[in-house]
Length: 243
Image (tube, rainbow, N blue to C red; front, side, top):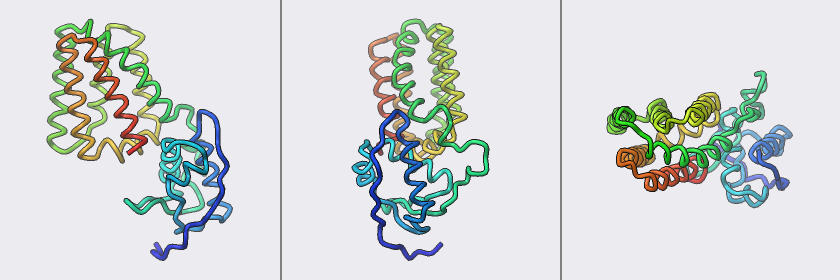
């Protein structure tokens, strides 16, 4: 690809409003690229500038940029920014582009932040010896994977589903199964996860958070379990959308 960059193009984007902010941001940026306002190789405005123009926080900007990158429209360079790669999306010929999936990464994070602290409260209260043994086995597997320098999402998923199982509430169990299924099907969730949680620094922190969580359940300490899960979910949000 030609490494000669043109100067940053100045475009005045329109502020957006609604729950699915990133879809609107995605569409506006894509429209400017497809109209020729941004040429292949052009650098997009910095995230801070996009936040100001769209009137939003950094989270939906990063979601929109991630969707554009996943669809092959832009590419990013560490410490340099995002650049236009193509004026066509990889999803144009498919039946449904990834950004129109009914459940968004924002939905997943929002649900987890509100539901999982409640679930772990009952897990800490009701976990049986058998439940705790299953949790210990899974956290040991996660520890081995972390030491080996890998992040295995299936292990993480199993741990959270096992916590739901330890709540002995069938509705909680089904809710977590639904969330797990959404995470598997949401391509942008997987794309962002692979660029964040799999990083060595995040991987180690992720394991330590789970380790503390399981210890609180073992001790049947409901208050501590809720506090740790709440912090873990907030850190999840920060890792996906802020860092």
